[in-house]
Length: 407
Image 1 (cartoon, rainbow, N blue to C red):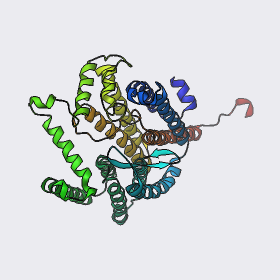
Image 2: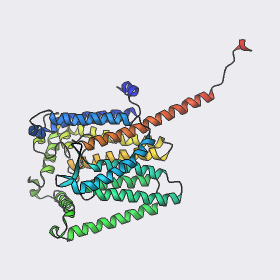
Image 3: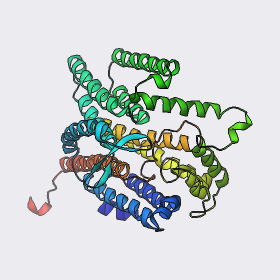
Image 4: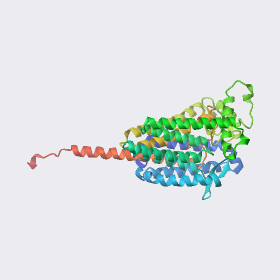
């Protein structure tokens, strides 16, 4: 398999293996976890085939993107950023409401989530802006641009998807830290965020929901989620009663408990028929139920390998942009994965974050494939540069030989 990947797929072979393994796990677990969707569609294979179609299309995009030099990705990101702003504004007024939030819009007959495109575009643009900093004056100007762009996009995402906005800001902040933005500016931004969040929490706690405009409904949804999560950590026997409010978390716990060490084998899940969003936000619970603790650890290690290989790639880059690019994209995938898994294992409140490349979804699957394609493209270009450097070094060290008969 390694030789096949090296021949037809350029870039980091291990990352290609991680990508293929995550796709394989996704197809297997989606076939099992989408039983409720299969029942509604009157077809055992329709939901899985739809998901496999998105994965196949995403894999083709990843393959194509990884052959494109990252300097063109840098240029395209600004077009993607402008489109993201337009779509995010559009979805605020004309978006389709699903699960009590207007995050989707219809594009060419397909449901599209603009926040996914926005995350990708912001990460690339921020990597580009940081890479252009050469002196303190550049930092002052470009730092302002970064904050305006990140603040605008996160602000547009925030009303309907707090967790995504927070995740994106954390990634951008980490990229600025790695890019060695001055401590003074980093601390100032951290202080402003803490003050704004503290004020928002105080308002939500002190002001009744019926006294607030409808635009703040999601804030009270998050308040309820956090309160449910906190109350579930006590010793009250009432916490074991399943109701509409805690159904997801309770059945997620039951799925994990049933999985034990080795699991019940794919296709034998029981909780998939009772767990809401078993094929999306809580698919990790089904993975542990069917493949057991061993399978759950394997999935965790796949994401950690991605982060580790991205870090190794960044250290080998000679310029700032590709290094920050692979770090930002890998951080977005891995942090989202760990948030999703923490929710499924009841280690955090419900956030609505899917498990990257595994959970059901059209936009999220395709955009995650683009993440992988761009990262693999950087590793491919880095390998080519190292190969050319080695060839040049060998050529320069060659000393022509003179045959005796030529004298």
